[in-house]
Length: 507
Ligand SMILES: [Zn+2]
Image (cartoon, rainbow, N blue to C red; front, side, top):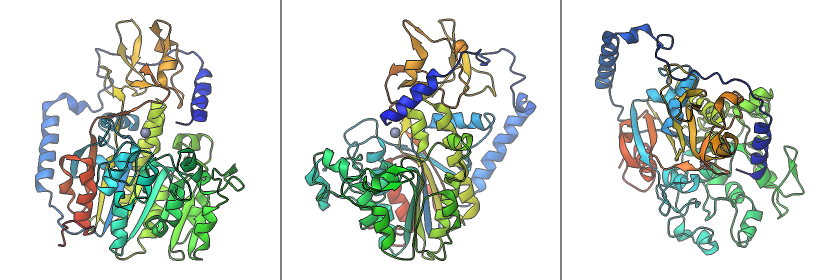
């Protein structure tokens, strides 16, 4: 998390006034909170179970080749995040769209050198099929972090499933709610020994010659894979332009005089660059070969912020970006690979602002539902997963239907405790006072920006090392069941779609 974001969180939290907490705590009378009265009978549960077993047993497997593959990556979308999002949708019986997918597995996320992964080594795994070192992208584990020579040693580069699709004469594209040069989407096109080298200034401050080591923005615009993307949608214009240029009202980060956006656009009159939602919506996929959209100088703001500031005409939702990307890619009749990241789930958690994380999860789920409604699942494989977990826990004995952002019960210090809390993170600073917790009853905890409590003080909450879910539907989705290593995921997608250099369904 950048320093300025942390300062903003501090300011927002200091503004919070003291009112009585509305948490219900534990209750012996659960009748008011039971969602369905049928739940009181065994017959209800038995009927539900029989229907579920029959549906599963009678489901026919689709064993065809996948023409298209769409991978949805919820950054930091732990199982606890999914479970909490159900409550935010209404109650425990609600489901996120992908929870109805027929095949579910789980993935082990560790990096080669570190127990709890970051988004860089994991994007190398789930997009390139190779486990890597912490903070490195698109390079094998022989490449050391921040090593300049390793960065340009092509024998240490891995290749992504986006490239495998391109090599097979099919299209590829990337969509994210973060900077487009951030670690997750970068796994589709970049080779970099430090994920922070998003602009040339980061390469030189990292000790490498920026004339030799291409930063991630440069690799997106001029690299072998990035330059061929049919669609690129996200944030982060500041990394593409020199400080003498301005985009989205902000001067660029680069120091090499380049305007990579102009460079990208100038290569063909069938390329279109867009800066806001309206421009994106107006693009006719039949009239342009390639679409590049950057909607903010930095990450795209949280969906909740966009709504509260009435900025929906400026920033497209993840659903709108995904639909436009599918429209663009569908013009390739040979098929496509699309990567879509719900990147702000992770940011909400890092700030211990669980409301943002959960709302971004729900927005991510909507984009997946819209995709299911749009594509032909007979020929399109959809895989939904996360790169790593987070340290948010979902605790207590609250009655059914209790507000997930409220309190769950009373602790041994005679104060209530929140259902959601974190093992570490900035929430510590706002929920502790000398020798004691801050009493939730004295807190205004209803703001979107409220920081949930953390046990250890950390300016930025860390990721979690727990396994994450994999949800699949479409051709051969049943291959995604079981506990698997994260780096196996792209090999399965490649097998089903007949791309890459390994064994495939077609070979
Ligand atoms: Zn993260």
